[in-house]
Image (cartoon, rainbow, N blue to C red):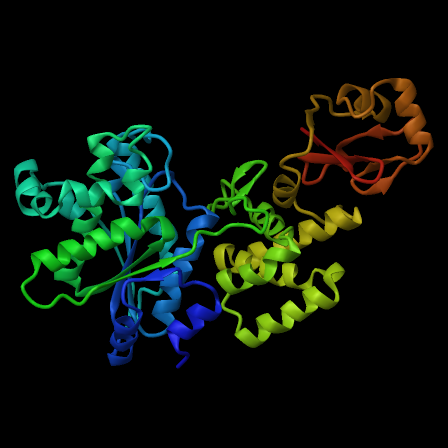
Length: 419
């Protein structure tokens, strides 16, 4: 079996570990149970979360038992880590809905069958009914205020202000670790580097609350940044979500294929299960023939398939190739919806309309004179086919699945006509 920690080191996934040697020994002894928490701050995880989910998966493939914790309780409070200001608190019903949605998403990356099957738990199950007196006496008593103030997540907010609600987040997360340690024999918590303070606080609570020599560990992975220092996972349209309804597989694929040469090898290590040999071969390609973008294509293929499945990947490739070549007649209406989501669109109410009128009405051309010029010069394409016919009428036969006509002006300017 691959040495897990060596593989994680090769991939650059080890940021901080409380006791690397001790953890190595635990892993050598046999399978361990580990967990990672995901707070439902939206109805979907985004690509930034993917690294921790896949790290849980790597532990599982090495024979360990992963627990994905959905923060139904902590999601009602808000984690101050890495945040400059207080979060807006969400309604309980919304957090419950988001928790269920995230639980479904996590289920597609972890294996819930077999010997080392994964589990999804929700911390609302043991926190929701905890009364305030019990919480303060049994849990809060173990935390010194000075200890909490020294943690980065709190210290960084002292100047701008932090409420008691967010201040208590660390204690709730620590209680999660204690609960899983006692009830699931969970020995390891993993998380992004901004979770270090919360994780070590949990270890402290375990140490104080258990009689035996507590053997638990904390492990953080780096936050994903790009070579230019900006945060990974954002595009012009906002976050890159794992939910296909929020970020289509085509947009997801495009986001990855546009990865900078400086970042692509790092992301292949982070987000794919390719072997070190395959990654090193792709790294050589980046050096020798960057214009081929072989590494970017492989990254986009592997991760899109992982998140959305083979069929959605093939669809994303088809849309990309059609847009690149201009040959779009064979795209389905569903594929057009994905690929042309961000192009200017126009709703046409007529069954038939002259091409000249359509070009002006939909603001593809500023005037009839310009429209005539563009048609005569061969700059106008209907569904990928050039037309130079000034009397051309756009009719039902020009609609793809009766829903769309795609007009291109020049080399790359696409417009979507909807019916």
